[in-house]
Amino acid sequence: MKQWMERMAGTDRLGITLTRWGLIVVLLWIGGLKVFKYEADGIVPFVANSPTMSFFYKYPAPEYKNHMNPEGALILANREWHERNRTYLFSYGLGAVIVIYGLMLALHPWLPQVAAVGGLLVAIMSVVTLSFLVTTPESWVPPLGDTEHGFPYLSGRGRLVVKDAIMLGAGLVVMADSARAYLRKTNGNR
Image (cartoon, rainbow, N blue to C red; front, top):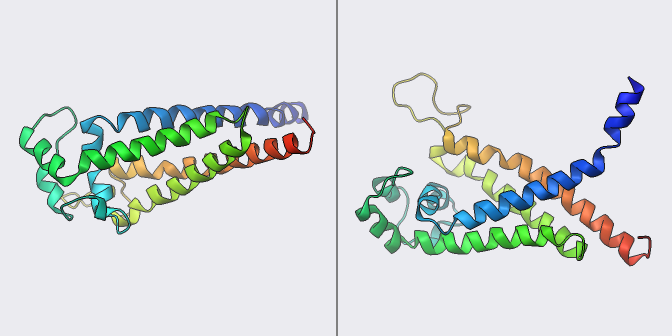
């Protein structure tokens, strides 16, 4: 048993590296998808209901409920509403920020101090995303006749959001690792 534990204990570097690259892939991919209208439409309930972000949109919640496009559906009148709502403009900006975070993490081998700040920003972003569990009614199964609704029954949107608890921890792990790498580099202990 001790040998197995020693082997498992020796995988921490691999785990940190996989965590960093996993974050980079997710951030670049999800951030990049923010330029597509279906992705922008999907985040509207989160932004519209957020007390700190709703000002980005022209129309207040819950007006968006009449203009939601199911994934894969094209309803031109809803797209026009989202254009007026600034849905797509906000999504482009958010996507750019998320991509920048991913690129910051990718700089770890050369600029670990930038990667450390990127890890911190990912952790902060994750806390903001987790706040949607409190502010977004669509995070919970709605009362449509089944007895299983509301808390603790996460909807599809809620399941998407709660995964940011992992992103929060991963952001802190890569932040600490990059900060240690920077300190080793500046102290001459390569």
